[in-house]
Each structure stands twice: as structure tokens, then as C-alpha cells.
Length: 304
Image (tube, rainbow, N blue to C red; front, side, top):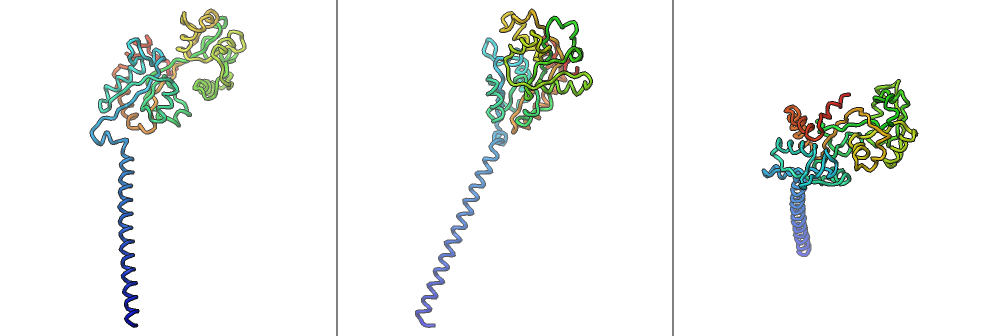
């Protein structure tokens, strides 16, 4: 090999060495960038617990409906009030590791907000349903109770005194939308009374005035309704359908447990809530608040 060939060989080796150095430097830089990105992503993943890790309290935002008296509302002083709000305030006292914020809002904003994480908890006299369990955490402990029953004509009150006698009388119930929690109430009744069932038909949406009118006309003999709604719609002197009070009456059936809704990411908060609620119930505080807001214990009707 001549001198020229030697020079070419040396240049080739030098070039290869330089290229290898560049490749190595690029690999090191890439690895470093990957490490930085991974660390950043890991930091993002810990953001939900950052407050706890830094010794700061997590702020719990409780949304409640601002008009559902006496469960959840804003009082004349502009303060959060109602049975469920009062219970949640007692829960807050039991859980000082959190900061608590109460936000009045609409039904739709509450449901969408808890699902999206805008709110941590929502209260609005909520019943548990299979559809809702897919979107929210339902704690083990119920919050309160909501009484449900039949709106019937006064002229049939002597023959219809409970759900069983209604089924025997005719069982003709105003249809209910399948997604309505009341639908499952009648489904459960029919499972428990296979030989004395109520006519359960699904329906499209209709105005509540139509349901009252259909019962008064005899098209149906009963309408399943929450007692509080009936009181607000018919019984009160200033109720929008008070003119129906002379022809209709209300028959209690049972109480349905109501729950606080939790965002799907707030399992630890829901667990802490369960412990607090159980303590409050054992201490008699919830019964005390039921008397204050309802004048009676609605929970006693849940096992009927």
C-alpha cells in the first residue's frame, strides 16, 4: 500500500471515529431528554396527590342544588342550608384533614360537574341507579332518605290503602320512563309480589300536570311520586296545581335512601366519608337533623 493509500485509510478511520462520537453524543442527548420527559410525566401523574405530599390540605368542593327545600337550598341569609348540607357540614367537622367548600348550583351542572371533576361531591336527594353507578362513586353509607308513594283519587282512598291494595284494585299506574329511578321501585315491588303485580309500562316524557289529570279522569288509578314533590306541586296553598287538591290524595309507600355522589377519582375521600357518616349515625346526629328539617325520621320507612 502506497503513501496515498495510507493517507486515505487514516482519513476514513478519522471520519468514522468522528461519526461515532457524534452518534454517541446524540444518543446521550436523546436519553437525557427522555429522562426529563419521563420525570415531567411522573410529576403530572402525582398532581392529584401533590397537596397531600406537600403537607397541604385537599380542598373538597361540595356542589348542592340551590332550591330543593328542605334537602338542599340557599337560605334567606344566602347561606348553604338543608338536611343534606347540614349532614355534610358535620362530616366536614369529622374530616379536618380536608378544606371544605360548598357551592350552590343547578341539577345539570351538579351531575356534569361531579362526573368531570369540577366538583368532588354532589348532593341533591340522589337515588342510586345502575346507570349512575357507571359514572360516579356511590359510598357505602347512605346520606338520607326520600319518601315515595302513590297519588290517587280521593274517591278510591277507602279501597286503596297501600301498594298491595292498589295492585288488587287495578294496578293501573301512570307509565314511568325506564331510566327514571321510580321505574326500579315498581320493578322491585313486582319481584317481591309475583301474584299481585302492578302494571309497569314505560313512557316518554310528559308534563306532571298530565299525570295528575290522567289519574283524576280515571285513565290511570295511581301515579308514583316523591312525597316532597306532591306537597310542593299540589298540597301547598300556593302550589302550581293546588286546584287538584280537592280530588287527589297521597299514600306513602316507603323511603328510598339518598346518597352523596363522588367523582370517580375520589375513592379515598369516599372511604373517609363513610367512616364519618357511620359515626354521625351512631351518635344520633343524623336523626337529630332529620327531626330539625323533616319533623320526623324518614329513615324509619326504608325497610318497609
